[in-house]
Length: 223
Image 1 (cartoon, rainbow, N blue to C red):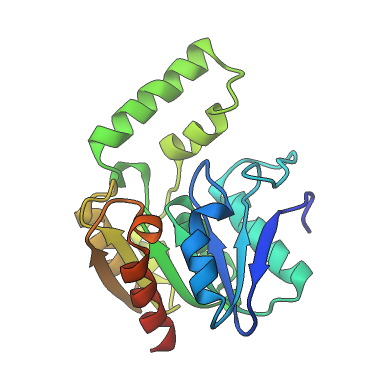
Image 2 (spheres, rainbow, N blue to C red):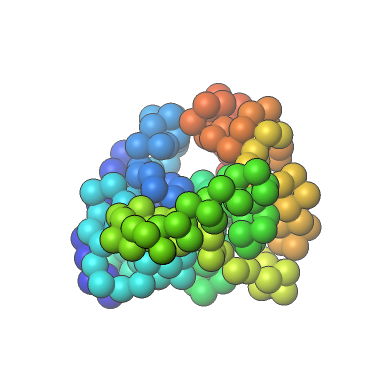
């Protein structure tokens, strides 16, 4: 049961499509997906715990907890099953939901997700880690510390865990993504019922390259 109020925006009718944003963001990242997919689905864009207009609460600020929050939200809303599209940490949240509550997901789209922190390019990850450890030493009360902690310590998925997920999955990334290309391909290889799609662009293809992104997602959902 949710201990907090999760903010969400809803538009459209039909089969539910839940959108999960990345670290430090909110549902507005998906502005182009909300408008487009609401023509075909009941689109629900959530703000994760402690993000956007959602409350923080007292439960752990972890990917695992965020996954349970999505499950509890679906239960409260009476959503038996949905397509789930997750960007970055939202993709990691989707994987957690898929591992613990696979019956809740019809199809899954992962955009710029990672199995573990080392999947991020070193040019991005090392500065993040240095900033985080600086906060731990000299700025322990920084509001950003929880967000940095997620990027430094999480997620922690294994190949074996991913191999257990039978949900049809579209694994997406940009060809200039902050996630290493070999890591994105590893995720697709580990998921037994997956399709890989690499688009021209960086980590933020859903927002910057939304025409190509939406086209591929729609094709996958209708296949």
